[in-house]
Image (cartoon, rainbow, N blue to C red; front, side, top):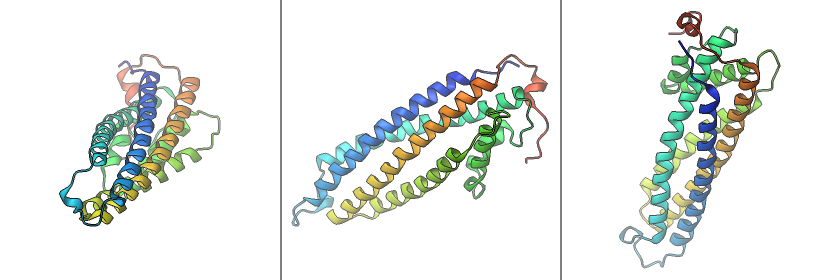
Length: 222
């Protein structure tokens, strides 16, 4: 079985992460615009009865964010799967996680709180080969990912409960903070992906391998 090249997918993912950083920065500006729009709304105006220009801006940017998040998320999972699969076949190292479970753990309740971090840590370590490499960036990525998910859900709940100008103002602040953190998260993710990609290119020689080699040793995972 011929393994697919890792470098091309790494370049695609890095582009998407950079694009996400730009779009998220625009989302922060849109949130600031929304905040000032609602905070300056006259007291006698019912916020539920008007549609402000800022609402349209936030809606359009939010739609772009949603679509981009799906595309980037799928690409990121493909990158993890391919990285794990190629490293198992070509690194000569014994790996705990299979390609399938390296992605699957992202969808398992409770276990999603730590298993994906272990998956990424293993990819980081194996891609760097026998050269010790500090994986602090992986810890930062995972901590920010967890916090970002929490803030994103909180922001969604706040906007659902908003029923007046003050509520929409608070909602705008929550989204500004959430999007601001997402910028940091994506910068860290970009750095991590870049460093793994560089280490992989330096230490791993890609080549066609037999199917039984690509599958690797049996795993104890479920």
